Structure formats: C-alpha cells, structure tokens
Image 1 (cartoon, one colour):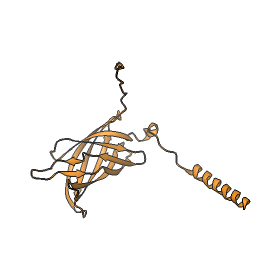
Image 2: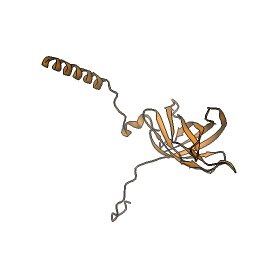
Image 3: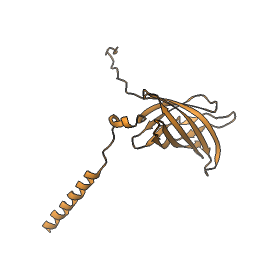
Image 4: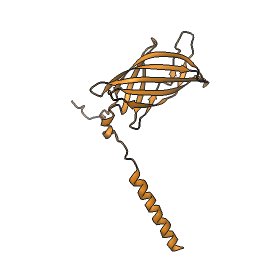
Length: 176
C-alpha cells in the first residue's frame, strides 16, 4: 500500500513535469513589440453625422479585443429612444502590410432592458509610425434580435494610446 502511494506520486510528478515543459510562455506588455497595437486606447468614433463618441479599447496579445462604450446612447434620430450598449468583445489580426483588422460585437437593448439586437463593427486600423495613435475607417452593422440586418453605415475612428502618468503627491513639486 505504501509503495503504491509512491508510484502514484511519481506518476503525478512526471505528468506535471510534462505539462510545465509544454506550456506556452505568457506575453507581457514589455514583449508586445511584435504587435504594436497591444495595449489600451482612448478612441473617438464619428458615425452618421452624430457627435463624436468616446470609448476605450484594449488589444490583447492573444488576438482578442475589448471595447467599453458609453452605457447609454442618446436617440440617433428625432423622436427615437436611447439605447443601452454592452462592452464590445472581439478579435484582431495584424496584416503583413502593418495594418490591423478588428471585429467586435456589442449587445444593444432599450433602457428598460429589452434586447434589441447587436452592433458589429469591422475596422482596418492604420497605426501612426510613432505607435501612439491610429485611425481606422469602419463599418457598423445593426441587427435585430433574430440577426436580420437593419442598417449598415460607415464611420471613422481615431485613437490615442493610454499611457502611465506619474502620480503627483500633495506637497511634492511638479516635475519639469
């Protein structure tokens, strides 16, 4: 019985060793030079003659993206109703020409919670040579709860990288 415990423990260690040897190393922010889009961005979108709309989008090294919208949008037309929108979840891919393709989906409801459908955004991003700004034409597709396309439109997005700002403590002279 005692010997069986040792065999089971040894097999467990061998399996754990194989698992550790085969795991993929993680990507850190410091390693993101292969994908300059990786990071957090403050984005302004222009669509359908509406006022500029702010949001924030993060690109992750694994090819996923997350965008945070305003939680409630004013009516798009006179007499329309406000919309509540979820965060957008999606994916991105770097192209050989240096551009980045992005697609994400946002859930839409009225402000009482009734599901209205989705908004899907597809963009082609061009990074500035500095890597700190980008611009992108995009298409926005609106669907109803059954997936029927209700509208398609074209817009423009412009973004600035969100960077770390040193914190100024009270009583500490400002740098510079």
